[in-house]
Image (tube, rainbow, N blue to C red; front, side, top):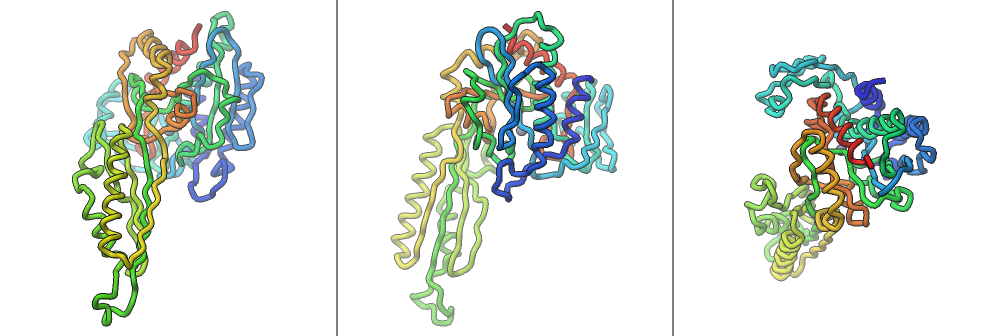
Length: 397
Ligand SMILES: [Zn+2]
């Protein structure tokens, strides 16, 4: 079986997550891939390979030296289904518009990233599903690296600690992650796009709920009495800095983002998220919101305004910085394979952020797959093959 066939076999197994079920795994079908991976890990010589009750798969390949972790996630994103994935291979991509099997078109004008992959072989969808290279390409890269060590028993490697997690796409990968079982000194998620990037930074994230209760009476008799919850919500929103939203934010800038504002004259609720690479940036936005709420309460003493601020995830950088060997090793493995490494950052969250905070420094590496979470997702086969070599060198003794 070729490395690419391995990827396609995983991609064909439906493992879409579901944020509404409240269970772990969020969908039982994720275990179908888990079971297959356990069988394969056992064949590859990871004698302790197993799936736990939560659907997470663990296995170790003992070696010499450090215990290095490799992680990828088994679930796929919610935006588009991964049922009946029918990948097709475009050999030696010419740079033109790609026609997907269902008639959809992928043009380099619409997706300028395609221009970076001219001359390479691309795996695309049939236009009806996502590809699931996020993150089955990551799984296939790790499995193919293990295959190399099985086929080349004389090549020495460090102890390789493998874990495939469920429910990354709903932010619950770390929920039942067993750090003792993983037993690694540091780890890598193989879950990115560009293969030259080593991502060691992500947003620090806070969720904000504001619940407003007004005073509801017949509007005809509302003079000096009716307090409209929706209008209070509107005032709160208008007091927030209007140029600090995702529309105006790029690079290392943060933002506040209103994700919902609903209700009626009597009760209304707002939900917001706050994101910034710096904790100070998050704190400043939180304290601004608290001040606005304080002033609004003073203005409308008869209204009830309740707030809650929830820490969602943290920037991994300070935690990863404590283990410089993790970045050093990744840089060396990339360079050895002719790739000039660049440090990158994620304008979002990652399971690795929570792993890092909980004592397992876990930067992120690329898979050579792009346009994640949609029908236009594709895998660059040459980059994927290169990453297998990178991961082999990453754990080499
Ligand atoms: Zn992913």
